[in-house]
Length: 200
Length: 200
Image (tube, rainbow over all chains, first blue to last red; front, side, top):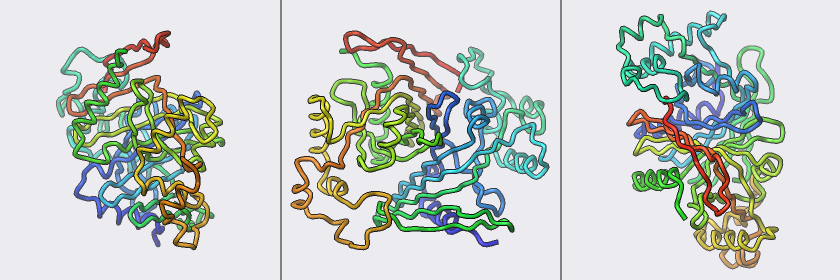
């Protein structure tokens, strides 16, 4: 399967910024049930296998999960400091949590869990995010045994899949801006994309 | 006038990240007229005088100006790499453009224009952003004389004022999260803010 041009561009940009661990940090915007925007930093976790679907992870108890249930539309802003580029990607999000019925997606969630460090896994066993601070300091340092006792994957761990419909790529150094749009869903897994140079 | 605790925290965070020019780059989310989120990188341009109002600049021809006219709600996500902190700030945006009637705000726009470099000023004389690429390369390199001929401030230059109502500050290194909320508009220019420690 041929990859889209924007996927290739993203992987090249990442390679050009690999000295900065935080070059993988992107900002993900969604819309709250009250119609106001929400925006937070998440970590790019690669593409789902050989597809163009972008992976993030989230705590299933976070507000974004609720927001996505009501409005799955999202836009990512991704600034890469070394190469001075910005990607804006708009599309839709899907939450893959403990209740996932699709065996392929449930497996993708287990695979992503297995890639998390012990410290990252432990965070899903922490008290519910956003509630008043738990005064028990041990609540934030569960042992690996305590984490494992919560199941093969801690229930609060969710995989977030982002299906991209449009990419707006600004290259500040070259004063260029390229817009990719999915114009047709492929029937063999490879979508058709348009690509245009626009004014920065 | 006393400053809010979150303003002090932001300025301290900036000082702790001053080796990185892009620590001033933040992501600004708004909602499009079709109800989908938009998110892009903008540069923090300081506070408006001694207030807690945050300043950005924008091209008045950009889509965000339209979006703000229909829905002024916004959220900023600001990740500071050196200190490993994130601020999320929600509030409302106001566009101060060439048609501004308030003399104080019109002056703030002129002041901000004067702070822009020659190269940054020239961008507001470029062809309209997002349209098909102008094939005339000179269109992207106006002379300072050409820029000056467009007026004391190029009409496309707009100041963006962000009035913050809630700040969610995550300190990853210390495993802390502090939420500030404006609970009352002050009648002497100093609002009342609540402050709470919550679970990260």
